[in-house]
Structure formats: structure tokens, C-alpha cells
Length: 486
Ligand SMILES: Cc1cc2nc3c(=O)[nH]c(=O)nc-3n(C[C@H](O)[C@H](O)[C@H](O)COP(=O)(O)OP(=O)(O)OC[C@H]3O[C@@H](n4cnc5c(N)ncnc54)[C@H](O)[C@@H]3O)c2cc1C
Image (cartoon, rainbow, N blue to C red; front, side):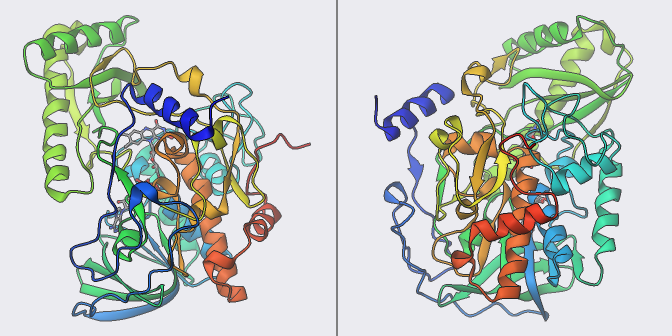
């Protein structure tokens, strides 16, 4: 039998179609003075000391807000984290760069709740807030044990914004939200995040939290606070989703769309694409399209801006190709592209435990399990793949339901920070599974509960027992459901 790290290397090479990639060294933020704590390639769960250095003087700010829990990013993980923390009694501030909550679901228009149910049995493995949101969107009953589909979709992404508004407002005054607010800096003292600066219409606002939960997807705040992280030099491609109306449904539509894209690419009109997924998800003449594929570095502002423009150009190039070559699109019009291009992968913090592909593929059980994942290792390549999104057989990398440990939400070197969602601590291969929406919500809910317990019991985040977090989650019908109950 091969040693575990060899198995992992081979699995990653298999998934990506390339030899294992180099990882970018841990980036030290140009505005920070913190001491770089570890070289990334060598980082191990136990080897990184607390960040000792304190960062520079805070920027000039217009006002200061004190709160128990600050959640940065109101996406899948962040909304669940803020609801969980405030429902458990913690005074919580939620900040989000968009004018609404929902993250990928509302700003990139992705209606899927993947990871909520086991692929073959359709048994629900994520309950709690994720199931609540699905039920309140009218898709299932609140106590569903199985679902008709393992990958359900919500019917309307605008109504999802309204639902989240309502749930956030229900928690007032314990939960406050600031939209159009970008978390842009953090200062630390003795390994503790002291302030997080947000930029919004009030100017620069200083937040003094007792606990910070980074749900930005990109680990922005964790990185700026000096937490060790890794990011591959080549990450999964970015995708802009868009919708086209007045399309005539017909059985061979997908094949016709695929041929038209091949022809457009041969004419030099489309650098890359995948699939395409052309789906009548929201209306009978309206297609929702995922097929844009833009390689980019999402943590580089200039490259992200280039990717946004490339995504729009590619979406419209696809529309023009279909108008030209596919009769079903004769009277079609381009309805909308969602405001943001979607980011699948960027920074992953190095936490107390780095979740691995072996952990997933062997369904390793953890004493501090706080959530369950079950999606396949869904790694998109940076190249055109016609007829599919991946260039491998997903069935070969389909785990059974697996545990996600509390320690993979706890960054090294900081005593009052948690992360949840896309930026938690996992290898690239494991993250390809844990990154999906319902799994991110489960992590967010656990992080929110952990923050509230930490405040109540005055226990630093790294010393908090994951088993206690799980106990509290289970008391309210949430937490891991890795094994079938009853
Ligand atoms: C194109 C695409 C297609 C996908 N397809 C699927 C699919 O079919 N099924 C599935 O389940 N998953 C899919 N995923 C994966 C999944 O949607 C995400 O990984 C998941 O949303 C992760 O949740 P999150 O909360 O970490 O991130 P998000 O839901 O993206 O939330 C992050 C939030 O943080 C905010 N934010 C970021 N930085 C800051 C900052 N500095 N200050 C303030 N706010 C900030 C963002 O605006 C956002 O609202 C897809 C992802 C992409 C990009």
C-alpha cells in the first residue's frame, strides 16, 4: 500500500490531469508588518506558532463599532454563521460587500443546494439552517429525511434575497447587517484580532469584535490578520452565469448549443468554455447557462477585473453563436448576467486540521465533527471541456458522507478567529468537495454556534471543544448527519 501522501498526490494528479502544482508561498499583505510564520509547502497542522507581532497603526476611521461576533461575508457560510451566532444569543454584526445576502446564490445566481443529500440514497445529511432555507424556499418540508433529488434547486434567486432579509431582520437587535461594506484590513495584538476595518458609505469604519468569523470565501480577513494560508498558483476557473429568454425548448438543444460553441471557438470568438449547461431552471422559455470558463487569480484585483470583463465577453459570444447557429434561439434575447463572476477556489487557511482527500474518501470519523459533506471531488480544469464540466469521471471520486472537524475551521496563530465555507482548512482535492453550497452553510452554522459558546464560556476559539459545539448543534436538530439516524 502506498503511503497516504502519495495516494493524495496521485489523486490530485488524476483530478487535475496535471502533475501536482506548486503552492504559492504564504502571502504577506503589503500593508502588514506581521512576521511571516511559516513557509507554506512545509506547513503542518502543529508547526505554526501564534502570530506574535502586532500589526501597524489602524487607519483613520469615521467611527468604531463594538460587537461580540463579527461575520465577514454574507454568503452561504456567512449568513448561516450570523443567524446561528445571533440565535444562540451573541450580539452579531454581519458585513457584506454586496447589497444583499446569499453570496454565490444571489450574486452569481447559483440555485443549487449541493451537498445537502447523499447522491444515491438522497438522504439529507445537512439539516439545520440549510434545510430551513430550502424548506422556506418551498422545495421540501422542514423535517425532510430524504429529498426527491440529491442536488435540489431553489425556484427564484431574488426571492431568496427576500427570505434572507426577513431572517436577518427577525434577529434584530442582536443581529445587525451592513451591506455595501467591504472588510479591507485587520489588526492583531498578541495573536488576537483587535480590529477589522470595513469600507462603506460612512468611510472607514473600525469594528472591535470579540470573535471574527471569516466567511469571505477568499479568507481576506484571515490573510490580513496574518493567519497562514495556501493558494495554488493555478486555481479552478471562474464562471459568469447568465440567462437567455425566448428560447424554444427542444430535445436536441444541448447538443446543438455544444456544436455552435465548438464552431465559435474555431472562429476564434471564444477562448474557453465547458459543457455547456443550458437549463430551463426558472421558466419554460428561459435558459440558465453555465459554460463560461475564465482562468484567473481571484485574489489579484487587476486579474479579477480582467476576468469579469472576459466573462461578460464570453457570455455574449455564446449568445451570439447560438443566435447564429441554433434555430431555437432565433427570437431569443440576452436577459441578464449575474453581477459577479463566480470564484471556485482561492485561499484556504491552514487550520488546526487540514482536511484531506483521504479523510473524505475513507469517510474518516472525527471526535470533533461538526458538519457532514458528501459531494464528489469536483475540480474544474482550466481548459475547454465539451459535454461536461470535468475531464474525469466524477463517480471515481465520489465519497460516502464524511465528517468535517471543528479544527478545520480554526486558523493557526489566532485566538479569536474562525473561518467557514470556501476558505476553511482543506487540501485542494478535499476542498473540491467541501466547497459546495449546503456544506458551506453547515460549516457556517457550526462556526456561528462555536463563536456564541466561546463568548458565553469565555473560552478561546482554539481551546473550544468541537464535541461541545456538536452537542449544542444537535440539541437544535443540526450538526453532522454522517451516518443514517434511527
Ligand atoms: C461558478 C460557480 C459554480 C458553482 N456551482 C456550484 C453548484 O452547482 N453547486 C454547489 O453547491 N456549489 C457550487 N459552487 C460552489 C459554491 O457555490 C461556493 O463554493 C459556496 O458558495 C461557498 O460558500 P461561501 O459562503 O464560502 O462563499 P460565498 O457564497 O461566495 O460567500 C462569500 C461572501 O463573502 C462576500 N465577500 C467576499 N469578500 C468580502 C470582503 N472582503 N468583505 C465583505 N464581504 C466579502 C461575498 O460578496 C460573498 O457574499 C459553484 C461556485 C462557482 C463559483
